[in-house]
Image 1 (cartoon, one colour):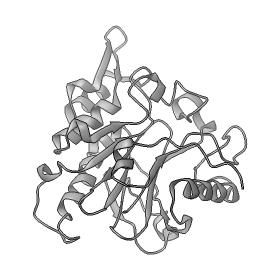
Image 2 (cartoon, rainbow, N blue to C red):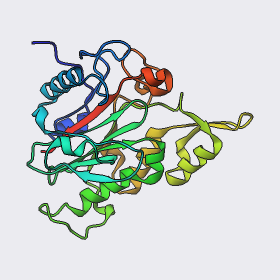
Image 3 (cartoon, rainbow, N blue to C red):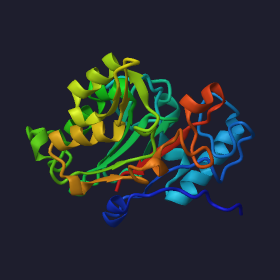
Length: 270
């Protein structure tokens, strides 16, 4: 039996008994330059299946119940149902797993922000792929509002997003403000959609800004009603959590381009 891959976990989600994890690039079977735990869906299918099997064994779910979609940097949300193979071709950047299903939902990233959401009241969960375009499109809000609207015994209710105060969120490995340099116009677009705190540093001479995507997502979650205490950064907000800085642990498209693998954030309905 091979060693199981070392996953990063949220203590907040773990204490609430939600099986989940954020992958690193260690513990899989993919060959260089994607070594070794690559979850890109358009490469070697046999190696992908083995990586997914190892992921499932570590987190604790049936690999045949792993749901993913074709991510397009939008705000569309889908619910895990039917055969996972039928969902993989659907365009969506947020996935929900229903209570009691044992379904796992996952998003793939290589600098973008993976956000895992959980409702301890129902056991319903969501996985969100939030690049800067998705942040501006409010994909995180789409997921939180869905969870809020379906909170009462699994039936749709009229509860507002402000009643999402009991939800939990984990923000996984992504590019940090040390490395996420964009044009000033893009930075201002992100700030308008989230908070001024999303702009970490300005370089006016070059017309560039450095954006803190974690801060942007946290601001949106707070606006939706989550408390700071219920939002956890995994691993943290320093350079240790920056995918571009840490080539040993993380894939990064901005660093490696087409030679980059894909990480995942995955969570299982309780």
